[in-house]
Image (tube, rainbow, N blue to C red; front, side):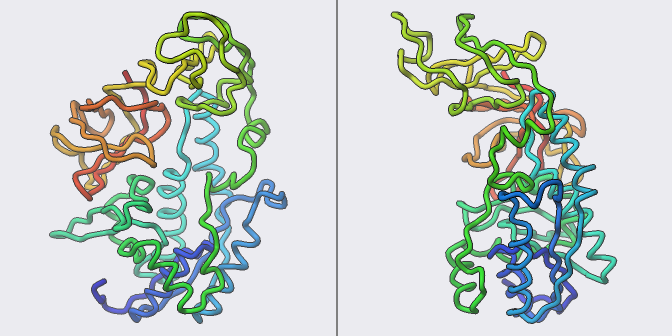
Length: 370
């Protein structure tokens, strides 16, 4: 990493190892480092699933070892208004949102950034695996160098103003090196497990959590032939491509349904919101699970304007290799992509994120696929 002039940098300390090493690396480079712990959720954080208290203790221990100040800031009201309300609206409409994308755009790189600037920061830093590159006065968002940990997908809504103020030190390193550095300098959370799941839900049972907030109407589960197989508990609780937790067994009948053998797994393939019917199909490769095109809206472009209509690559979900595609239409309102190979279980509400090699161009929220 190239040395930069010393600056006042406010680091989002989450209690995890990535943000801890981020703070250490910046301090090593001579920056004046201040830590902030963001509390984004408080509805039921006395429950067994919420780790906020432990995370803050871990973050405070890291700050102590590194010899930096740490401030505890509560963004829960912002989070509820800007992220959680949208999350519930999307689920109620039958889509599957990605709140971590919105959390980055609205909380970590907006509310947190604003707060850091009020503290006199010149830059903010987080433990995300991504990189920022400045070229001719413009800022590019690049994939993290560790392909297994790259988080640019979740950061694709960041704009020029946000990227100009942001540093991602661990984006230059493989995760194994981050763990090694943490152990070497004696960080108390060097071996702490990576957090998984949606930020405010943590490890708690997802359906049980949603049930507290959404009204749901049970309805029929049907297959691609229109046969009734059972009853769903509410369309909001299912996502396209889902295999577990559907609540039906195999259909024992001669002449198995199209797309799979008699005992093949069932997958959620379609939701008919108007009729309140959940459609499932047998077999991972069933045609109802394959899409050659998609549409997206609510677009955000890192450069500030849409990329040219040309071949590029896209991800339609985080844990996915880049898929070759062509941009058929792109502006600030609408995106249409065509894929060379069919994409599996393209899900409305998730993000379609475009790449030119290592450069993340931006993207939008998937509205439909065919």
